[in-house]
Length: 435
Image (cartoon, rainbow, N blue to C red; front, side):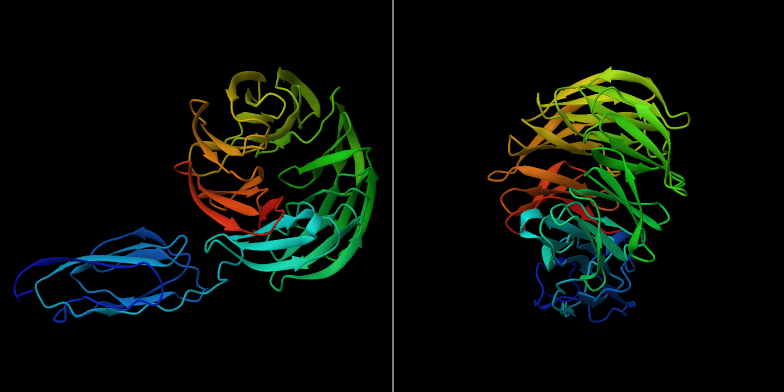
């Protein structure tokens, strides 16, 4: 290339360990910038891009920008760096990337994947798409919950009638607490002072400061529990009823008779105003007066329910007839029925984007529907595995699906498309992100 002749240069690094020379030697360098694994560009421009890195992470790239170069950065999975620029001088730029760290995501992008009968928890680095650590404990591991700051995890064992208190920074069990037999679900109060465990005949309440059992409440066959936003009330499903618990005294202050099994298909609006429970019919409870607002038709054998981000609509996964029922919560009325795949068991609606994701347990697929039109716009195969549970990443950019083939599938919540298959073990079940 002759001096004085303009040329457009494109330099791309697709993996760590590459060294490439390309840059104008006569230009005065701008400051050096460091790229981190979770770098999210806020904007790009000639000379100086702005971005928000994780300050505690080990850098993957260090590079220097020149005035005649525009940097474009993409680094949501594997380290990549692309630069495009125009120069009238001989290119002699060198950028050498360092090796990618294996576990840098920490709180906010770390997900706990339970392997029930294997008595294991796989720690998933959702950015790198790898299992960074594995913990073994107990007999049959169920759904974990976390302290609001992510420092502790509380993991129930339904066979051993125990809860394991895990130090999330060290990935070690700090305490084992005896609870009721069959405990499968866990939820932590908004201020983090108590953790409630349900699934058996009682609700076991853990004092998280002392890591000791604070109270036990008998409610019959219990399932899900929800807290009011201020944490003063807990709403626990038990048999055909919803029990309203004063979290200060642990007393049951009201009982709402649903007239039908409360089951697993329960959800609460983000502001805590309504509780939705579905079993053939969806019943809406107003929490201010602990009274039933009304009922609306749902489908056969509901297995999962969720309230949309703005709280106005609820969605019920009907395993028995392969549909999703869409309900107007405040009314309540059924406004749409969406045909999905066989055996839908869970719905996730990320806060970012306009799609809902449905795990079709019998169909080895995930249905993606438009939350505006209530129409399925894509079907993502999980063959040879069947989907079990799903979780949206913090911020809502991705949806992760545990599958029976020993993998977790990573999906793009903005486009409703498949991104990656991550091996995690032989029997992944529940997946919960650490705050």
